[in-house]
Image 1 (tube, helix red, strand yellow):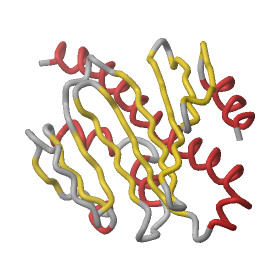
Image 2 (cartoon, helix red, strand yellow):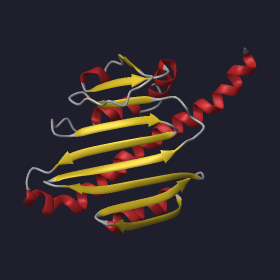
Image 3 (cartoon, helix red, strand yellow):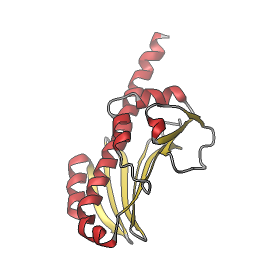
Image 4 (cartoon, one colour):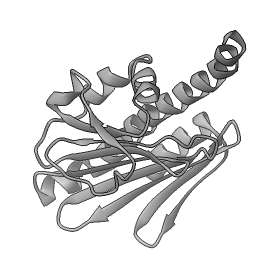
Length: 187
């Protein structure tokens, strides 16, 4: 599993490292000098959590996208908005509705959000808060046998899927930042 994560990190960023930190497997690299960190953590019993973050201090908007069956308390300063077709699977809260609608209107984000597994025990949360873009994906294997047999393939594949999804937000932020000066100049 570590070798697959090393291959991913080496082809997607600079200054990369993959190492164990207690029971977590940690992946770090830079995307255009932006720090990227991901962790794969075992949460007994049969549950795994992938947590990824990027630090983007220039972005002060806030949003929270979370699997519909869960409730999250840290939505201060945000209000719930409706974003079909996401409403069938997710709750969306944000501090700036125009910002979030523009971001999610970018290439592939809504399609990829809808393609995350629909299993009722899976929990996905993607959020931007205090300059950190974060994603957390918690999921279970059906049995200990399935976990032993498939862990080394499933965990790196899901890590890569979540990392690539989070990078779409990052690209959307870069695009919105580039458009802001042009919009200000036209006003």
